[in-house]
Image 1: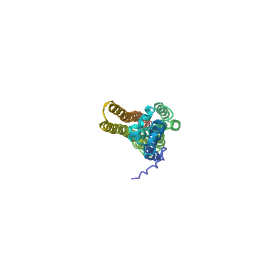
Image 2: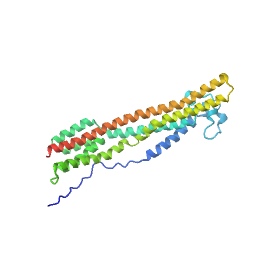
Image 3: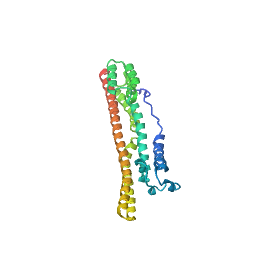
Image 4: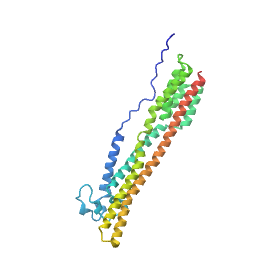
Length: 289
């Protein structure tokens, strides 16, 4: 019985994407440092508090619990304590990865409507014009276009293959599509973990800052003389503590909203990839029996 020699596998048009992890490693650290610098030198500026010069030489932060009379609500946020710079850092991390994911997913979406692109490919395949279908992929670009182009290269090879059965050819096309998909999807989902994590952590950090601020407020109340001055001191302390809650909830809300937007867009791209694979296999099975 003669042996069937396996056909040489063509090089996929979708190459392994060697993206740097530098942003994933450096961005959180840089954002946290930037959060502290904003809190310490912008919100805690000496010009923002009437008595800041009395504590200007104190290390790390100028005795934030001793400062009084901030000029405005923004600088009053400084009095929320050391949890505030962590929350500012979390907010900066969210903004950084929102921009990074937006650029990546926008590029992966391609230059046109994916549904219209797939219809054009179906039309060209129905007319057995594979080269025109490949040209459409070059115009479309994006993840769906890349996967479709990889499948079309294998599709074109299988047309001239006389050694495999139709079912084997269809399976070869499907495998090529799956391999191309495996290279595309991780790039779409990368770094979304930062948004999902901060969505939970920011709220908890905000509550932690609030609790610490309340503890400090009631501690000062207990050591005071009572009366209207004590009540005023308590109300100011509670107001300062709630800045942590506001920052935490606000950061968490933005992270959740953007995470859901990005996952919805990724689901749409994934659906387009699945539809492109189905189009190739069904077209080949019907035209080249």
